[in-house]
Length: 288
Image 1 (cartoon, rainbow, N blue to C red):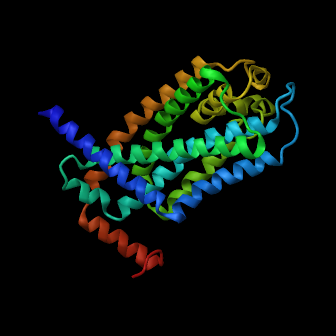
Image 2 (spheres, one colour):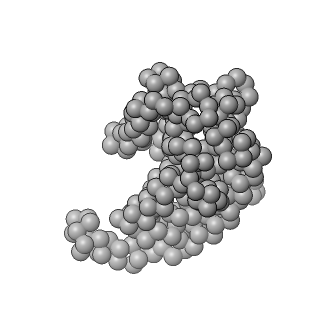
Image 3 (tube, rainbow, N blue to C red):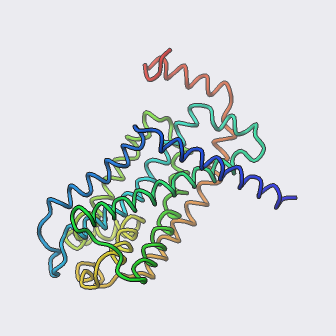
């Protein structure tokens, strides 16, 4: 019986995820945000002419590989929390409490939406980079395999964490401000747009705690030739460490996300929802 329920929830979640994905594709405003990110990454790469120090590899290739990691990171750790907070404010969690299997189906749907968005954005970035600025592409079967598992594990590392953050953020108006400052700091610290070896060692050590640094390093290993290892702190790609750190963050994210989302759903009530809407109306965030 339990297996039957889970199958039903999974089917409902996949169906809901497909619907939300179609809605995204038909929403020019939301879609333009992802396209703008790709355009900015390609434009930045187009203006970089020097090589990675100590190698003959264009710096633009390293930058595009770093932006690929950042776009995956952004979808899971910036876009997803905003979606969750906005839908919570609109009463989605309250409605899900009255729906059998609503929370599991909702989470599956969000995973479908985020994974499809992230993979589509990554594919578009690599294609646009290769066509417009002679950007990097995976080298052989090993490169494609590394791209696949680093992307999958990277999303597993950030999507649950994004869901946990979305469960505790106060409201959509404060969510972006609270998220973007640490995310931008990590973008600079993690060697995504320039070699991480140019940063002070203490900064490198702090960056190595977080998943973005390892996502970028793993994607560089898939997209850049072996000569680029000279610009890595250890002089190698450290793929076992990439897998270990991303797996640890994935486990931590799941351990945090499930109880926090359940707690957020339990705390939802009609009175809380009405109070938030009155507060938003008084502040002018929504029409009274």
